[in-house]
Image (cartoon, rainbow, N blue to C red):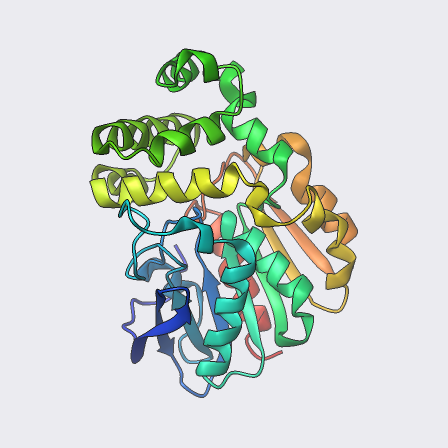
Length: 317
């Protein structure tokens, strides 16, 4: 893999973003380098040291953060008394702006994976003057059709896993919206109900989205598992808090002055809806690289090479 060597942060902190939330952030690489911000997926996954290695540490000032409720940010979504009503896409965007100003950054490259691509796209659409370039993989736009595909649509491809998935729901909710039904279970005051729902949700994700061992192992951590499942279902059952369905794709022309690189596995289920192709054709100046025989994985061979090539290309732009 052409990843850059492992590095450690030269600075980190907890930023008070309001609503009782404090967001963990760290900076790595060259303090005088080109700023870049890393937006993790999930939502709720948290940032990892692996993402630091996608950037030349001599050329970039690399900023990573754990979005609200995730990773080292507080309060964590796994805690029953954490108020999820203040964990929304507009608030995550406001957090990015607070962090950018806190770090004294004028403009930065935005890198995102999966939900991080939803957040990165909407951030760039609403704040185009502070985004220099965008690099995305596992591309998603947060539409209702994408959620329906990943919860009920691919059930035809994985019938046995789907039967187990919906079988954990109350009988009267098995034909409805699985994300909304699971979110209700994950908000239950009964910890056993919450834990059983979190396990069923992450088992479904493991069954349908092949991932490297390090990604699967995180679901064995009950704190991560519960926070992840609660956050994903919170967003997926509320239209990703975008205000209207299909908004990100419709407003793709707003990105016309921002160069972008889209790296997508040919076997990513989002491709069944043509999402990344539609985004690419609606976004003047974007480039699309499709990696054969790869699914929804940022760390797959070919995907890593393409992303590092993109950050290298933009390093001195």
